[in-house]
Structures are given as C-alpha cells and as structure tokens.
Amino acid sequence: MKLKINSDIKSKNVFKNAGLIKFFVDDDSLKTNFQNILKELNLSFSSELQKSFLTEDVNEISTYTGLEYPAHVRFIKIKIDEKLTNDFFRETFASQIEDYRTISVQKLIIEIPKKEELSEIFPISSFISQSIIEGIYLGDYDFEVYKTKKSPQKKFDIYFNNSQDDNFDKLITETVSLMDAVYFTRDLINEPSNTMTPKELAERTKKKLIPNKIKVTVWNKSQLVKKGMSAVLAVGSSSESEPCFIEMHYKPSKPKKKIVLVGKGVTYDTGGYSIKSTSNMIDMKADMAGGASVIGAVLSAAMNKLPIEIIALVPAVENVISGSAFKPGDIIKSSSGKSIMVSNTDAEGRLILADALEYGNKFKPDFMIDYATLTGACVVALGEIAAGIFSKNQELIDMFKAAGDNTFERIWPLPMWDEYSEMIESDLADIDNTGPRWGGAITAAKFLEFFVDNKKNWAHIDLAGPSLKNKYKSYTKKYDPGFGVRLTYQFLKEIK
Image 1 (spheres, one colour):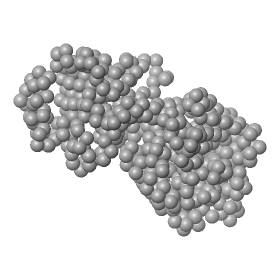
Image 2 (tube, one colour):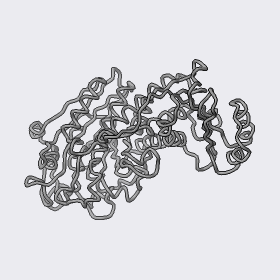
Image 3 (spheres, helix red, strand yellow):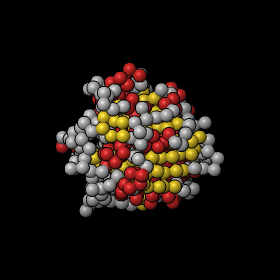
Image 4 (cartoon, one colour):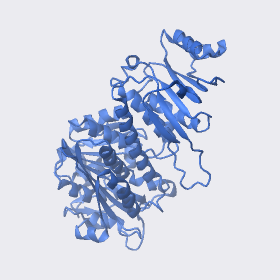
C-alpha cells in the first residue's frame, strides 16, 4: 500500500470510511473500559463475545459496525506478563496490516494505551509509537517484482488518535526514513542473483545514496588489482560478473565520532570448489545481507542527519566455479601483505573482508564494525533468532546489545579468547582460512581480527541466522528481513 502516517486527527471526518484499532490493558479496569467503548461506538456484542474478550485467551474481536463512524473496528487486549516484549506492537501491526489491503476502508485510526501502563516494557515511551510504525512498514513489505499478478495496492492513511509523544511529527519522519532504508536493504537482498550482480549492487547503491548526500566510489577489477586487493580478486575473479568494491562516505558538518562499517557482499555463493549442496545453495543470493545492511545503515544515518561520520565498505563478488577459480590448497595474499592458506573455498566471506578491514584501518576510526552472513556455526549456536557479536570491547558489546534489545534485532556475545587463534595457524602461510569443526563461528571471528589494527575498538557481527527469512515473526516469514539496519541505526543514534 501507499502508506501515509499522520500524527493526529484534525477533523472528525477522518472517521468516515475508517478502521479503528484500540488496545486494552488486561487489568482490573478492563471490563469497564471495554463496555464504555462499546457504548461510545454504539456497538452491541453478544454476551458470549464480551466474555471471550474479557476472560478467555482470545485477544481480538473484529467487526464491521455498519455505522458511519467508524466502518470497521478491531480490539486487541494486552496481557502485561513475562511473555510481553517490546516487539508486541511491531509484531501485532506487521501481522494485521496485510488485512487492510482487502478491507474496504481507506484509513486506519490507532489508539494505544497510556504510556504509564507499559512503562516497564517501554521505559522510553516514544518506542511504542516507533515500534507501531515499524510494524506497519515491516508487515506491508512485499517483493513481487517478478510476479505477473501482484497484490492489490491502494493509498492508505494512518492516524494516531492519542499521541503522547513530544515532537511526534519528527518521530514519524525519522521512523519512516529509517523504514525506507530497511525497504531498500530488503529489496537488495530479495533480488535474485542473476540480476543482483556485484555491478548491479554498486549501481543501485549509487542511485539511492548519492541523492542523500553520501559520496559513493566504486572500484572496478582493474582498480582492485592496482590496490593489491588480492583476496577480493581471488574470490571474485572466476565469475563473468566481475568483482568490485563499494566505498560510501557520509560526513556531517560536526561529527561526534568516526565509524567504519564493513559488509560482506557475496551476491551469490556456490561454495566454489568446496561446493554446497543444492538445498544449502538456494538461499545464497542473500549471502550479501551483511553488505546490504551496511548500505541501509549509512543511508538511514544520512537521511536522518545523525552527527556521526560513517565510512561504509562493501567488497562485492560472486563465488562461483570456473577454470580460474581459487582452489583448496591455494595461498593468497591480502592487501595487508599477510598470506592466507585456503583450506576451504566456502569460507570466502572472511577472505574479502580481510581486504576490506585492512582498508578500513587506514581511516583510524573510533569504532570499526563488520557484518557478515559468515558461518553456519553461528546459526547452530544461536539459531535464527539472534546474531552473534564478537569483540574484546565490552562497552561496544553492551551498546549493541542494548540497541538489539530496543529494536528486537537481538544480538548475543560469544567469546574471543586467544586460544582460538591457535586453531587457525598454518605451517605454510600466516593464517588458515578455516579451523577445526568446533567453534567455527569464533575461529572465523579470530581470522578477521588478524587483519584489524585497533582490535580493542572493533566488533564482528555474524548475522547468518536472522538475516534470512524465518518462521518466528510475521514480518520475517515471506521475505528476507533486512536484519541489522534498525539495530545499527539505534547503535549510531546512541553514540555519545
């Protein structure tokens, strides 16, 4: 739908041909509040329906009232208990909004509980409204570019009837801009690899970011050769779709900090000669989700004018098989001059990130963070629900964990003890690109750490699990969700 979010209701005419969603907190005042609203709206639910809403584990009643004000009503009950999370409104609206494509109303009025009723879950009250807006956009997203029969589209206005937030118009603008960046990221990831080549990723990035005052520089294959990025070239040169390197730079007038974001941009991964099975290959168009997340993050920061200088780096390659493909047993040199023993060509993401991290060192940032769908081992450890974070900087871990808790793009730390470095030592090169079976997510992080100068201010985020579509949320079921954009934006926003 073509959504428009409005901060308030200026006229009673808004209620014409409108839907209404109203929330009730399940407490001692539930019955009185519910019956008062029924009278106010001139509704007469049966005693059985009232009983089910008030006492049973049924949390929703929907009806077409047949009245002019409003035309459609939906009541939702909130149980404040240990199961309630700050994702409640996001998930609720993501699951509900698709219905309004087909319901014959043109507007939706949203009334939310008073902020003090939810203060334990939402200590910052604006997160309630923000999560509602995010949920609406997350649930309304689709990717039907290649369908001949597309879902119905219509203009749809959404009104908050009882906003309790100061500067609510600003909150709407900020959140809608953030979700625009999430949409762009999701489009990049959900695009099939036969169209989303490294070159296409670079072109779409330029087209979207440059108008938002972000400088974008793209290095082609010959420039990669001149810059000595042999690891990127080793992975990407076997494909007819040549590798490239995307550098983005957003610099506000008075930045608080300088941050480097690095994202893995493998637009398709066959595993190379260490080839994947078909079942493990089919979703590998999303192996550039880390790179797409970085692109979306710098876009969201620029659109909302965050006072943080950001250099975002995405090495973009296809990992395929040809006569010129790199092979198990090869020894390659990164741009740092450090040599790498290739034990597994399906551990290619860390190779291209080695060159990107080495380049990122040159900016001497306050923090450098990389994002990658790096290991199945991290999915084994944390499932599809959370990303792993690896760092020796506890403050950085805590900042990301807090951002993840607030956005519900959750993140969890794994150890970075130096004993794991011994597992990727090589007799023939400076380092091996894989270790033993156990601790694979950690040894991958230790490999990346080898190419970072300021290890104390660096973090690696392995988002292999939550970056692909999964069954756990309504907004993650059908399409790859663009995990990491909201997380990183919240992190950047909280930097002092």
